[in-house]
Each structure stands twice: as structure tokens, then as C-alpha cells.
Length: 378
Ligand code: ZN
Ligand code: ZN
Ligand code: ZN
Image (cartoon, rainbow, N blue to C red; front, side, top):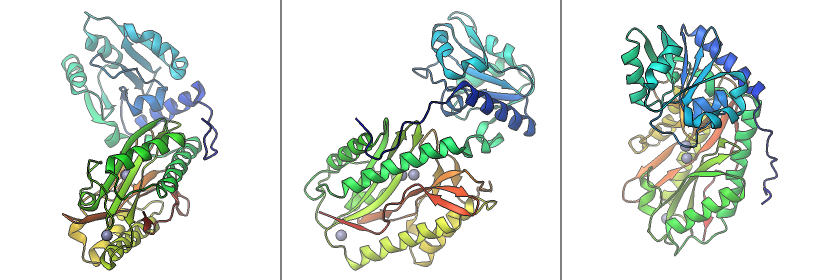
């Protein structure tokens, strides 16, 4: 089906793209004082090699990127044909290991002594296996050692994130026209998932429909509750389009809201705007949380804003950096993250408003541009 948002499928990443990324990664590892990088299946490996095994299993796959020397990916022998077909395989060597042999001995031979950064999502058993063979080698997490590697997006990645955001916005525009009252949260959630796919998403990660009291639970996904006239409804949805994430939240009301509902929504909307306006190159990520939180605290609802204000987004819908108190990482042009303050009144209702933004030279740009005012639905 053609994509009604009109965004063309971008050209796939090439071996040259992965060569550039690998070189940049090795350089960042050198600057961090590391011996190299160890990437396991998941977003790090996808970013640097284009390779995603059909399933992430107990058999170790690892791309070893030394600061000096050629990158090598070791794979289970049975998966070697898949690895050879991946677009990045032209720019690194391939090694394999066979069932019945010790995979950690084979992997350890590629490492040697030193200090490596390892994918955050690497299996503990793989790290333990390497530690047994290399007692003097030490490890840190990719996020801690090289926080900027995937956090700063290039122009191609920004275009994909913008397209994903536009698709999520188009889905929101459509959902305002569906019937809410008398239908279950799950029915509305399935509508949202259908819309995301219609607007080009290949994967739907979540469709939160939190009606009435369920909206006060930020992790409520959707359920059998029948939406009633008078409900606030939190709609938080996203997934992947062209390999990059969308994630947006709007809170709507079924019929006319009360004064209190209007006021709470308006506070969250002002908090979201304050977070947006706090985005500046060089300012610490925690300042976005502080700016949004100050609005909610000043309005007397500080205790009801029970989560950080945002998270990074890219190849996954939730990733570092986190916009949270204590995060000192400075914002840089090309970083992309959510700003999603909320107020949660247990047993009653919740309000959350979320946009994905990217840091620009002079502030921030939104990838979600649907009205943040409370929409009235039927
Ligand atoms: Zn109401
Ligand atoms: Zn969200
Ligand atoms: Zn989010």
C-alpha cells in the first residue's frame, strides 16, 4: 500500500555507510582510552554493521572493533551465510565457531588484554565466558564509555525519525475521528496499530490507551475497560518506520471536560513547552527534566509527576540518553529524545503529552507537530 504521508522509502544503508560508522566508532573508542568495542546483536550491531540475526539466541555473535586493526565479526558457523549477506560484511572480517567447540575461546582470541566497551544488551553469560578466558581484560558498557556514538543522528537518520514522527502524527489525526465512548481500550488500541502500519510503520511497539483511572498508571497499555463519556484518555503509541522510531502521546477527552481536567491538562502542556524551550546545545540533559518539572511542581502537582521527562530514540523507541535528574551529558546537535511530562491522579485520571524533538544549532525542532491542546472526541 502506498504511504499516505507521502514519504518515500529511503535508500538502504550501504557498505560505505557502515565503513564510515566503524571508523568513527574506532576513533571514539580511542578517545575514550579503550582497546576496542564489542557489539552483540541488537541496536549497536545493527548500527555498525547492518546485521541483525534472525533470532538473538544463546549462541554468541560478536563484532570486535579494535582501535587498531581490522574489525572482525564472529558468528556461529550455521549463521555464517546470513552474516555474509549483511550489507556491512564487505568492510569487516568474518570468523566462525562450531557447536561443540568453546565459543568463548574462539572469541577471546580476537580480543587480547585491554579494556573494551560492550553492548549494554550483551548477554551476561557471554561476558562471563570471556572473563573466564581473559582474566586481565576489563569491560565497560557502551552507553557509559561512548555515550554519543548512536545518540547523535546524521542527516539520513534525522530524515527517518522525521518520517516516523509524521506517520505517528497522521495516525493521531485519524484516531480523533473514531468512536471512543462505548468501545474498549483494546479496540481503540488496535485502531491505532492499524493506522501506524497504514502510515508506513513496519513494527508497532506500543499502543497505550489509558482511559479514566487507567490513565493514572503510566505503564497501563490497554485492556477490557469500556471507555465512557467523561473519560480522559491517554494515547501513547509508536514503533518503527524505515528502521527508526516514533513515540508520541496526546491526552484526549470524551465529551466536554471539567474545569479541573482542563487545568491539569493545561499545566502538562505548559510543562512540555518549558521542556522544549530548555533545549540548548551544551546544556546538560537533566535541565530538560528540571524545566518541565518546575512547571508541574509550581502548580502543586510535583508528587504526581512520577517519571523522568524523556528518553532517547533512534533504532529503538527507548534508548539513552535519558532526560533525567543527574544526567550530565551535554545536549549536542542531532540528538533526538522525547519530552513527555505527565500528571497522574490515582483512581481518577492521568494526562501526558509527548513529542520527539531533535537538538538544533539554536534550540530544538519537534518531529511531532499535532496540536498539544486537549482534543474532544466522541
Ligand atoms: Zn472528564
Ligand atoms: Zn510514549
Ligand atoms: Zn516515550
